[in-house]
Image (cartoon, rainbow, N blue to C red; front, side, top):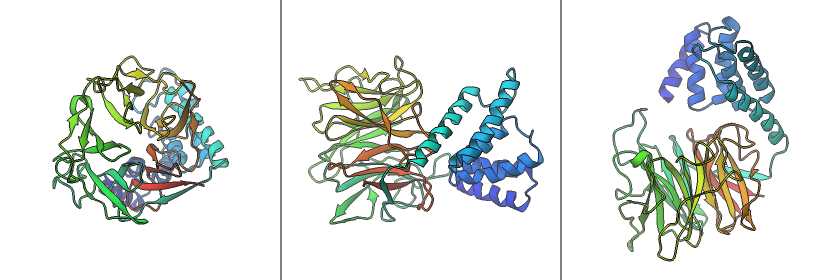
Length: 389
């Protein structure tokens, strides 16, 4: 994908009048890195042939949104919204539905508010010992904050020498440990966990003894692996009981005492899309029926990436459907008298117009860790440390 973007960028810059090359260059930027730079290519087309695509104004707005230029994003989204309204019967190609455009307009208005009132966070790239030139994401850590497990698509140390359909290495799970104040060089967690195809981690228990993983089985299921006496990990097994279904289970978090699990699933009967559920372990050590957290947490769009804090009362999660700036935004809710409080957006600069998901907090509550696509990183997605000032 990166190679294709670079080739299209060269072609577009060599001939700024080449409509197709400029659209592909813009489109490839939206799919990879430098999403805000997509606008320059789309605008070249708009100046020459504004009717090249029915939804061209939408794409211009999207590039501006990623660049935090919300005023210009709104300008083009509103142009496209007006076009849709005037052509309400249009069913041709390249149509973005009005509902999606309305959502983008709302995100830009939210973005203006959040950026104007930034939160007091320090966000620092975790460094080259852990991050690579490839995608690194989904960091999880133990309560002591001396071990991180994460997913990567790097070539060095990958179990599989081949590449996936997108010409990038398959996902592998890597780990790093802290010695003093410094993290060690990240290494592959081992062949007992990683296979020849995609393998990704979801959560690590507070005591570092249980690792939860995602497998493509049954549309997507949650597995677990136990740490052995010699430090190695057992071959992953599917979580027993009611958590896995014939639908997709995509993320999980376990409470400090190991008795409550929060997970995301798109099974029927929820609020819509992917929802967050919980299960409690009964006296026999078995997981109870899965309970949807309801409309106080879930929306008609997707929720994912739950993390239950070590206090057992604070839930962090990501949502497409709440007051966000674009993509997934990270929210926080607290359990008070058996009910979840209204989720609060963690704000700018933790959240941005791109996906912000899989956020975890240290045992002392002073730091957070997540993956983000930010300028100046080592690859598309890198791991970052967030210090709450």
